[in-house]
Length: 183
Ligand SMILES: NC(=O)c1ccc[n+]([C@@H]2O[C@H](COP(=O)([O-])OP(=O)(O)OC[C@H]3O[C@@H](n4cnc5c(N)ncnc54)[C@H](OP(=O)(O)O)[C@@H]3O)[C@@H](O)[C@H]2O)c1
Image (cartoon, rainbow, N blue to C red; front, side, top):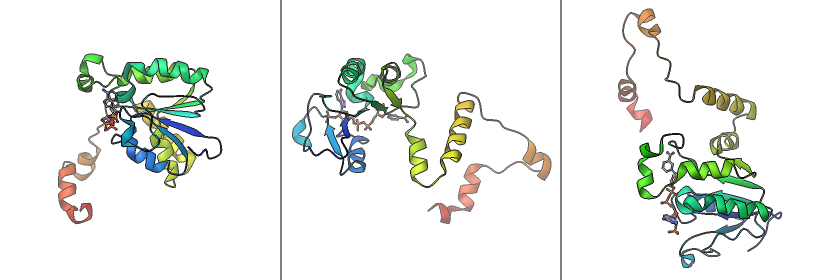
C-alpha cells in the first residue's frame, strides 16, 4: 500500500454499489478496502484493521452492530475522522425501517459515529456541491435551510391560482411539455 501525504483510508463495504465508485474516487490515495472475500479486490482485507488509518468510511450494511467497537479501536489507534454512509430513514422508528430486514443498521451506525469522539461527517452532499463549483457560502446557507426545514411539511400556497386565475400545472405536465430537454 502506498501512502500519499500520510493519509490512509479504511473503506468498509468496498465491493458494493457505493464502495466501488468510492474506491475509484480515491484512486491514487492509500486505501485499505474491507470485504468478506479479499480475493475480490487487490489490497483488500477481511477484518477492518485500523492500524495507521487516518479516516474510516463506515458502511452500515457491512459494519452493522460492529460499528461502535470498530470506532473504539479506531480512536485508540489514532484515526481522526469517520465518514458515514447515511440513509434517509435514520431518524425513523426502527420498526418503520424496511431495510433492517436486509441487515442494515443505519440508526445504530450513525449513532456510533456521532458518539465516537472522532470527527464525523455524513454531509457528503455539501462537499460534492462545493467540488462541483458552488461557492462554500452558498452551500453552507443551503444546508442550513435544509436542516431548518427537515421534518416539516413543504409549504404549499394558493398564490399561483390567485394570481393567474387557474390552478398551478403539475410536475407531470411540465415534464411532458419539456420531454425533449428531459431526454
Ligand atoms: N436513500 C437512502 O438514504 C439509502 C438508500 C439505500 C441505501 N442506503 C444506505 O446505503 C447502504 C447500501 O449501500 P450499497 O448499495 O453500497 O450496498 P451493497 O451494494 O449491498 O454493498 C454493501 C457491501 O457490504 C458488504 N456486506 C453486505 N452484507 C453484509 C453482511 N451481512 N455482513 C458484512 N458485510 C456485508 C458486501 O461486501 P462483501 O460481500 O465484499 O463483504 C457489500 O459489497 C445501506 O446499507 C444504507 O445504509 C441509503
